Each structure stands twice: as C-alpha cells, then as structure tokens.
Amino acid sequence: MPVFRHGVAASLSSLGYLVEEPANAEVWLRERPGGIVLLTLCCTEDLDGLTALCRLRPRPLVVALLSANDASLGVRAMRAGARSVVAREVTVSALQRAVSATLDGEAVMPTEVADLLVTGRAPRGSVPSAEQIAWLRRLSDGWTVTRLALDAGYSERAMYRLLRAFYQQIGVSTRLEAIVLAHDKGWFEN
Image 1 (cartoon, rainbow, N blue to C red):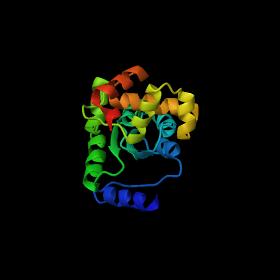
Image 2 (cartoon, rainbow, N blue to C red):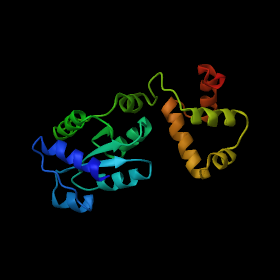
Image 3 (cartoon, rainbow, N blue to C red):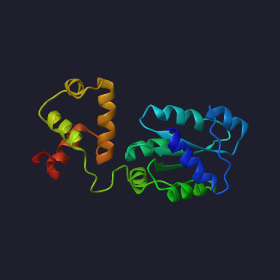
C-alpha cells in the first residue's frame, strides 16, 4: 500500500535513517549487509518470504509487521528469524522505537507473542472469535474437519492450519482440549 509505505518511510527518515524501497529485498540485503527490512505478514504463506530472507548470511535484521492480531503468526515469525514483531497498525513512535531497538540488538514484540513463545500458551483472557467458537461447536457436534472446511469455504488443508493456529491461540494442542476448554469457559452458552 503506497500511502502506508510512504508514512513508514517518512517516520523512519525523520530519525535520520536512510530509507529505501527495493524491488527485491534479498538482492538489496546482499548489496547492503547490516540493513534492516520491514516485512508485512498477512498470512502463513508470507512466512516463506521471511524464511528465505532469514537464510541469508549474515542474517539480516527483519521486523515483521503483523497485519492481523495473531500471536501465533508472531511466534512463527520469530521462529523463522524475525528479530522483532510489531502490529502493522502501531503508532509512529512505537514503530520508530521497534526499529531503533532492533538496530541496537534488542527484540521487540507484543506481550501476547512473548507469552506464547515462553509458555506455549496464549495469555489468560484470550477469547476466540464468534467464527472460531462456531467451528468448535460444530466439531463438538461430530462434524469432520472436511465438512467444516466445506461449510466455512476453506480447503481441508487450510482448515487444518486455521484450527492448529486457533488451538495455539487459546493454549491447547488438540481438538478435544479445545472443546473441553470451550465448555469450561462457557463459550458455547452464548
């Protein structure tokens, strides 16, 4: 999005950073080792690009900008090699602090990402969306993932990925644990 990129460039330029918008980040990093890349992640497929960048040597500084409030995507970005993770909607000062801290050798991330990295569980109070609760309700009623995917408009593979990320978001590992948690939390009562 050009307006977003222009705003990011202006906010970082105001701190004295040289900001460029290369057509190919890998080529740019090879020409300028030590540079920092801001990379927007919208979905799990964007992690492939991040992983490719982080395989370069020397390992580049990458700040992953999450377009969705998804702690599990933030964790996967950190595990793929991002040095910091921030929401794409952060304030200008928060983005400036994250870039400066990353350049100073520090990692910046939302507390939800840190909690999930450290404990393997989402922080208490992590409430699923109405759609996610509906998925659990259907699974508890005996629906297969194939049927759920068809109903929700996803491929079966995508549905498995979404469910796995959702389970991680609420701090469980299996469908059964998720259903039990939903009953315990009263999510099905609404």
